Length: 273
Image 1 (cartoon, one colour):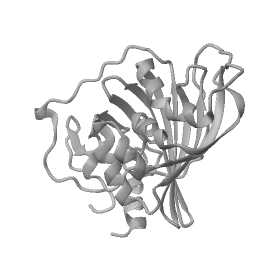
Image 2 (image 1 turned 60 degrees about the vertical axis):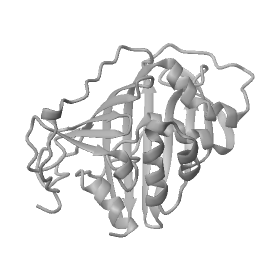
Image 3 (image 1 turned 90 degrees about the horizontal axis):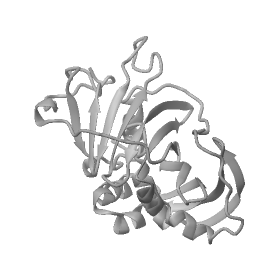
Image 4 (image 1 turned 135 degrees about the vertical axis):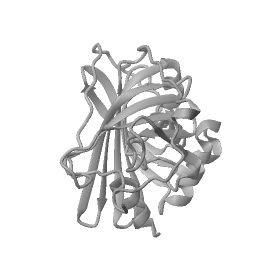
């Protein structure tokens, strides 16, 4: 399967439908940004450290793939624990996205190199999870699951270069700095934390272009409030991923599924019944 085919299978296989990309607004108290910002590249590269310091947050995601004249998209909401390196997302599939009027949301657990999915494919019992090693996915799960892991995103930002400060804005009632630059998947794979290193190495091989243009919004504590990234599979297949973070420090409890709850049989793709 070619690069374009892998990109289409990654997102269309989940049953996405056309949808518009939008910004993220989160709740929170208005905050004043320090009038003397640190070097833009330094601020962005330290985003992963700031997230770990924040501990947890709520997460809101959007993803859109453009391939030729076709656009498909999906959105999700959930929580993430940056210390334990695990998160949970519920992804809403639009009507008619998989050839039927309605489809149950997909629940994902992102747990340090492992992706668990419920309601992932036909033939999987409703109470069972599908488990995948992100290092074995062609894109390292940067787009496969329909959402980009915020911790992996932050690790990629450690390679940020050509960073410029666009300006200051208000996002969900919080004053933020808006930065623009480029990260590199291959470079990130060599310096990332062990839990995401394997996935990034796989992604470095799966994407046609390892450079990832981004726009980042950081609050006064250097925490990611919003990040927009563009992944390139080929000259005709591009994925835009948007992740918004808010309500830092809230209690988060995520349970790893028991072995008896994991499905090990054949998964039937909606495109290949």
